[in-house]
Length: 327
Image (spheres, rainbow, N blue to C red):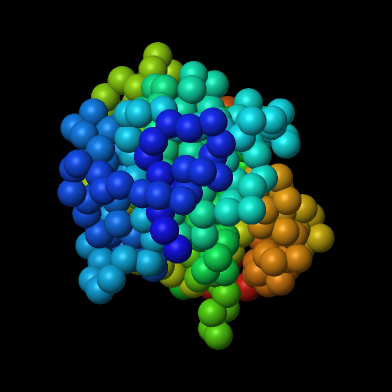
């Protein structure tokens, strides 16, 4: 299929009928096990793309998907939006979704191509990238979730929770313990003959400023950590963790049932409108709900929160090895 057009027209479907090459040559990276070609129309667009994606592992062979970023604006359909995801408008088109971020950035998605353009690209990409990548990856039976993935005994633990629930805090604690961290925000899952496989989106890692970790100031309450901390590749899913704010400095870890975890998993899937349909990913999340599951409650004291989270991860290892409930 041809890639999206990069000209400005009144109908986004027209933008899919032609394409022009980006003026900045792109790189080919491995994204969730798929060869994806990244391209930017100029240095400003390239800088915006670099701001939301770390350099991924290089891919070999021909690209299977294409992501292009440009400064020029993109059209949206000439009708009211079909719905909204948070404050992003979307239109469900025959080729795939079109999204518009407040501020003017528009993303047009097909089954193999994404083009993003216009507005504040850095902010627009940050807000729409998980959704557009989710729309791309569903065609490969790979589904993106809002979560973190950290190394535990035997594989990876998927940590779920909405924004400000402590995903980045858990990732920082895991890094401090020398564990692998695949993601702190966007996780990919797919079914394999051996079970569920987990990988992560290599985007810049930022943590709450109250943790006292040195890093570049993203905003007053967040600090960006150096690049290169996230692990590459994939790992088997061995645990699902639902994050919570604890009521004591010591936090806590307790087992959960699959019936509790299943709705959390479904809510965590990045979806635009009815895509992907629940029937497409239900078998995957149902399999995820059958692995050991826990609630991990962070400690209330910011000064000791990383130590507490690290200790709770150690307790999780013990529980996985023993395959026994946690006190």
